Image (cartoon, rainbow, N blue to C red; front, side, top):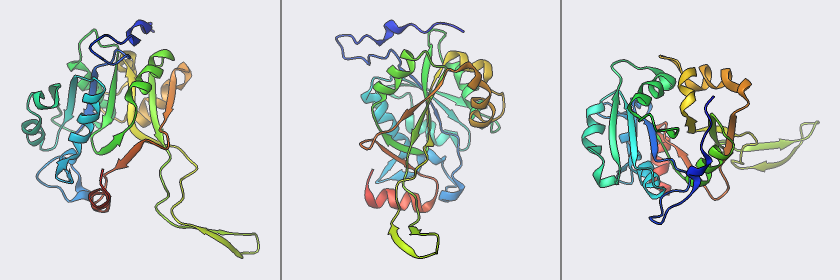
Length: 247
């Protein structure tokens, strides 16, 4: 496996990111059936008058990611028209168009063909989430660990109220929508170029790639903190709440 050059951590005078990563792939081919979308892909659903994809691009721009490949499928021309060449986002945009759905693993593998040979590691995100956190810290840790994959994880709140009771069945208390004890996959990754050897042509990275590379001992997690923001947009209720409570 190739060595990752830690010297790319240095920041230059133009305040470029100190992690040396300025490439990203956004998985933007979802149809969004549960959102009721029929005329646009899921990342083009609007929150407070702005497509979900715009929130992600804003964060990426702030952290110096200048080259973004969009893995698109359903109604790809809508997203392509919206993004254009990426000038208004301060990025260079390229489209990786799937004629048939390839799954997240296959989509990443195909989109990687749009990355230059010089790209050693890159960000990957699901295009239907809104998030804000320190990308610089994430990418720097990935490189320092010489990881092949870093998975961002988050502890969301339980959508249900929890009833606490003892062994006799007597209720002892209530906890309305507590934070989950488990950490879940946030749909955000940093991947190194070598991941391409393990990606399926058609299939999912979570089920067909990650479990098969654990033996490398080069798969890590990055925990979102209390101050970070993550909101999935999967249903009409999610979209309504995102519009009500802001993003």
